[in-house]
Image (cartoon, rainbow, N blue to C red; front, side, top):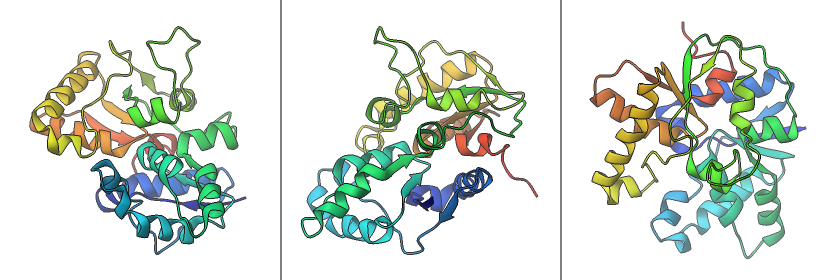
Length: 248
């Protein structure tokens, strides 16, 4: 198979380590990965702000960049959900529908398509796992705690394959961090309070790292950790599954 690697703009600009780890991990697992050089923003920020009617250029370019791959994989639940639910192009509806059906968030691709059973990774640290809302409730990466249903977690199942890792328990396993894209700008005070509560849960259980599938949520919590002078770090799940952050 050939996979088109979609890297969201904030990952590209602020957290390239997550993108590099995604590429390296997929290649370790025998996947042929191509990175379309002309990719840009998927249009989610505009759509979230009520301007989806202005995302036509983003949709058209995304289809042009990714329509011919067997699969599209991205280290971001929120951007993947946006493409799955909102990409459209009246001039090429079949290609738009094809793109929406073959795009996957990284951990979903590893568990549902590659069906990974083991990983050659070590990460001897205490880690708190943040379940981002888009990933959990939109992409169904893990079960929602309010449902009386058997529990599952695609990110959790992969992390449990990592040697030496200790997943810390949380009081509220799927509480929102308060980022919410443009919500953190429009409702700054509420967003910060939610983020502080989410971070406090991880800290109270001794987490050394906080990980998740969405770097945007982790970025929000990282800002709170830094302002509070905490030594706890955030790390995208791809970097842990790839064996930890790369150091020179």
